[in-house]
Length: 156
Image (cartoon, rainbow, N blue to C red; front, side, top):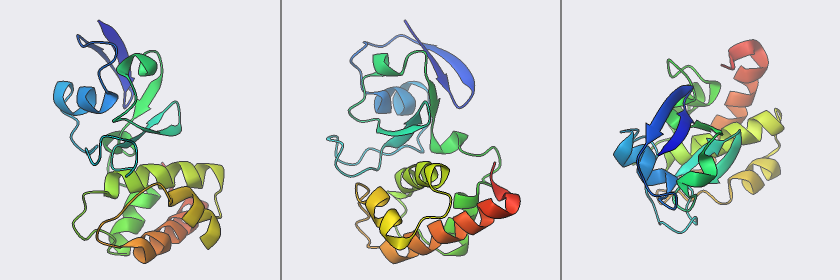
């Protein structure tokens, strides 16, 4: 049995310690906002926060997450009012939407570490997140907007 804290809730799961965190989140806990993309930590669709750091849940063994705070897209905000979520909507970022939860989770770490990123900062931080639809310019605009919203007290 492995004890997890996901989105501020405690869970005990009966899975093998080498089970990828992604499958525990999706299949065991029913948190399907985190997506499976490549299974090799190359695309970023499965990005979640582990003690505040962006990790690829498809290659993170669940045992590594035990005793740490896990945040998924569902836990980023209680009401979808996080500045990034609002900016994503305002900038009409999603096309197919499949990569968006991973994109937002990576962007959240960027904005926490650098509340006023330049384009080059955004490009570097988001380089590991692939958008097959090519919404990169809208993603960049949304991150800039979220930084402004966050600076106005909109962070949750």
